[in-house]
Image (cartoon, rainbow, N blue to C red):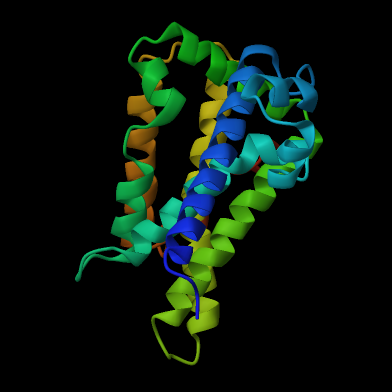
Length: 237
């Protein structure tokens, strides 16, 4: 039998651990966004967060984990949004609602926050320039896709649940990947951010509408006799 208050002590310890983890991650993001991923050593992150370097590695075994902790947390919240969707709400609607809500540095930059725009460009530039970070990003997205597929499969006992759930999860997360790529290309091309947040919502809404209405007619080629023939064919070559 556990002594009185033991559960409360464990709860406080877990809360303290989560607070420390969040502090380290937030400190790392701030430093990375200001100066770039490669320019910031883990020792500096530890000093800024007022913890030991060993503590940083206890929470984040690899330096890349510091950058992608937020992306993974985002993925966990996405799956939770699907789990907690209201009765009658489709998975597509739940994911669309979650992904298209204004949030983060993009929303801040779109509202005219110059510092947020600078950080957004710095973070996207360092990811674009680092094969290791891009691979880590794709792994984080793949992990979220797998977790979402598993949750969807658990909701049904249909014999094809594993396949259809994985297809559904990949289609929905494909919108997320496409929007990440669009934002990255836009901010690195120095496009003004005042419309980018709105543009992301518009493009995302169109992408989800495409999934909602089906792909049966999407990209259908015109009938053969209406296609433009190559010049040599038109000239009888």
